[in-house]
Each structure stands twice: as C-alpha cells, then as structure tokens.
Image (tube, rainbow, N blue to C red; front, side, top):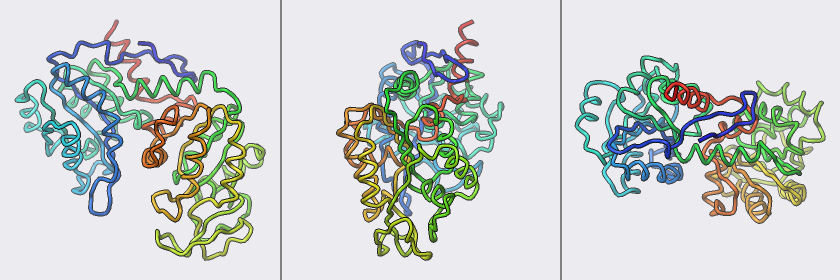
Length: 407
C-alpha cells in the first residue's frame, strides 16, 4: 500500500498488515505501551493498549507466535526496577483475556529459549526495550539480535516514529517489515490535513515540552492562528516582558519565542488572564489574574475564563483544528477548566479536528469526547513532526525495507 507524506521527501511507500501472510509465523510487534502511572506504580490509563487491540487481534487470528516489545518511561539504557513492564503485561492480559508471558530480559539465551518453546497463538512480552543502551544508540548489533527473534516485524508505535532507535528504525534493515493498523490510520488521517487543509486552519498548542515551539515555525505558513497555553504560553509571555512569577518556562527557547513574536505577532494568540496559585500543588489556593498583574510569588497553572472566551470566539469559524498539548495542569481539577472548556467547545464544531497524542489525547479520552473528534493521535511529537513535513525515521525505514525486500 502506498502511504504518502507531503514533506521534503515526497511519498513514502511501505507495506501494511494486509500485504503479509502471517499464518504460523513468528512476529515481533513494536508497540507504545508507555502508560501513565501514579507514585505507587499503578497504571492510570490503558488507552494505548486499547488502541493496539486491532493489530494484536488481527495477528492472533493468523495463529502467530506474538512477541511484543515496548518502552516504558525513559530508563536511558539502565535497568530501573520501577520501569519493568510486568504490570503492563498483566493489564494487556486482563484486557484480551489471554495469558501474556512477560520475560525478565530483552536479550539472552533465556529469551531465545522462551521464544523457541512458544506455541502458535501464544504471546510473550519482552522486558522494557530501553533497558539496553543499544536501543537509543540505534545499535546494529542490538537491532539484529531483536530481528533474529522473528520472521516479520510489525511497527505499530507511531508515538515513537520520530525516534531513530534500534527497535523502531534499525531493526528494519534485517527483517521484512510493515506498518500496523495504528500507524496506517495515523498516516492516512494526518495526511489529509497536510495535503489540503481547509481554511481557516487553527492550531492549539500547549503542554510542557519545549520542542513544540519549533513546530510552530514549521507550520507557520499553513496555520492561520496559533492559540497558545501551558508552559509554552509562559515562555511567550516572558518573551514579551510579562512577569510570570514562579511559573515554569523554557529558557532555551526564549530568544526563539521573541523572534516568532517579532515576525508573526498577528498569528500568535496568547492568554489575557490566567489561573495562578501559591505553589505547584493540586490543592493550592488559586485565583484568576490578568497577565499584567501576576504577583512575583505566584505560579501559572491554567488559562483564565476571559482567555477561554477569546479562544472559543476565534475557533468558531474553524474548518481545520490541530491540538497538541493541554492548556493547563489538566490532571488537577482546579486547573483543568481551560482544557476541558476548549475540548467541549470544539467537540461540537463541524471542523476537521486532529488531536495530538500524549496528555491531550488522554484528556480527550477521559472527557469521553474521542468519538466527536476526527482523529485522536497516539503520538504527540510524532504527529507534529509529521504535520510539519519532517522526515520520520520509522517511516523512512519502512520505505527502505519495502525496497530491500521487494527488489
């Protein structure tokens, strides 16, 4: 199947699940089960597992030996006990009502033996794929050892498609590969926004990660207005000389924010009022403050009611909306109004509504609004990189794999 990305590299061509005969094959499935947990290690949301069920059930129906690999947290090549994937394997088993044998390693003779002794129709989950430093280093040796476990590799981890890691891109040098249903669905839906976005096209950008500011620049020529919230809004406000108190901001992108404001001030829409608190705490006393009057000792934790009204007025005539990053600390009730109000408002619009992954997707899911959105992505950074037309290493690897194993 031809799946295309309108970026500098034109069309990516790669195989999908329907292009393979999986019957009685060993399959290594790379998923994104990087689930949110509380301080006790309990899983808070299993949305990403549920999204993977279509691919998992399809493969099990083909009577495969299914070997599942996922990352969990950011162990950076070290073994961290609280980031073992035992509870993830248990949760998957409970959802699909089928045993999932979790291994204590990724490599080694015990892993090889366990896979050899598997029966068709059974499932094994490898230990956290990032416990080995070869993953992030994209080691050919590590990738080759993973590839040796299987006959076919299925990439269904769109949230990591922008990472040049061994279990994502490197492995595809050594084994026939294809995209799973999640990746196929992401490419098809996001591609519609890239090819022909209907104007007005608005982007809602928030969250805590600083990398979104670069994406703003990349999308500048396509988007009519950017509605900013979260830590990103703090960075822009500080760039304008606004006192943001003790609020978080990104020092590294401060000058970049000043540049964007100077060159595209008409497109950058910032809060007029904010919800501030005495400290970064879910139970902290809060108040609504105009951006000109933020006390030096306060912390910004959400956009205010006037800003919500302003953003809703702008969004009224939207034909295309992309949203990446919550507008406040959504997981805390006192600071969730901004995200909750905008989510409910756009859910009733007839526009094309693309929701980036991560916290934004979790918020939409928790509010029960997923069915009212055009597409809820499983990948935050990856979806933004895709929309910006940047090359995604996983998709490029799928294209190279297609050429290598079909020549």
